[in-house]
Image 1 (cartoon, rainbow, N blue to C red):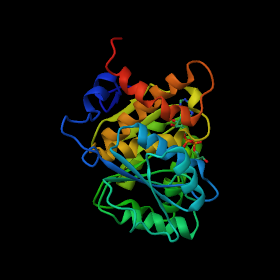
Image 2 (cartoon, rainbow, N blue to C red; image 1 turned 30 degrees about the horizontal axis):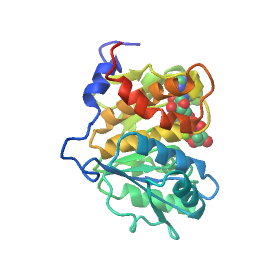
Image 3 (tube, rainbow, N blue to C red; image 1 turned 90 degrees about the vertical axis):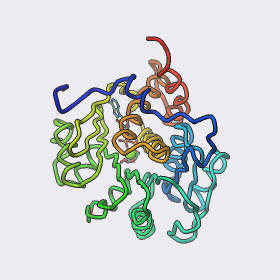
Amino acid sequence: LPGPDVAALTRASVRATLPRPAAASDKYRRGVVGVVAGSDQYTGAAVLAVGGALHAGAGMVRYAGPSRPVGQVRARWPEAVVTELDEPSIDDVGRVQAWVLGPGLGTGRWARELVLRVLATDVPVLVDADGLNVVAHDVSLLRRTAPVLITPHAGELARLTGAARGDIEAAPLAHARAAAAELGVTVLLKGSTTVVAEEGEPARVNGTGTPWLATGGTGDVLSGIAGSLLAQGLGARDAGSCAAYLHGLAGRIAADGAPLTAAAVAEALPAAIRSLDEES
Ligand code: APR
Ligand code: MG
């Protein structure tokens, strides 16, 4: 896989790129991330995306959604600042430095309205899962001035580009590159091999993952991590790269040779970040 246009993600590069709080930092300067995810049908995606964002170092996580996921996010993560939405609007959520958009959002009118409003803001947006399913009918929605990082699995990328899912799985690097150029966004393509592609830049391949990550909800945690890193000021390519690397490492730590849960991946993130500085 490695060649002139692709590099493996390394611990040294992630250690050098990952933001650390300055001595005089405060929670606002460390980055505020807004999470627009979950629905009354899919509450867990909201809990897991918020969990990923909280453990990846943002100064504050704001969550906005309908009553059922709001109740679960409040119960599980008292650290999050929560806004219950009666209407699909983000006007009352407060200022954020980046958004996580899509996990468990659904694809009906509510979801479509929220997707339009979040993409209309002037800050970076991480788009995943149902956020991608909503924009699949008009991918020009992804073209905006502020950065866009998308985190599809092969099936979601197939809906965005029209390529066949099997073809994407057989050649993830080529398809991630082509999608980045065609859509004008940074692409983190998930799967047994995870790649990060941006037009005009060498692609990056992550090798830290484990097949134990193939369990429901781990993708939602990855969304929260990547959005948290965008809010902390990383560009889309670096945010995607560090998120993929740390998510894989946290998966290894959480699994340790046995099944993991998605929530355990979020909770293993601090250990993964700590391990960047260890001798090896
Ligand atoms: N080896 C390493 N990592 C893997 C492997 C593997 N064999 N299989 C999966 N993974 C990782 C992926 O790279 C990704 O980070 O597990 C994560 C799975 O993410 P998703 O595919 O988004 O799955 P999930 O979290 O279950 O998504 C929840 O959202 O995207 C929708 O349709 C999806 O209903 C599902 C929901
Ligand atoms: Mg997913």
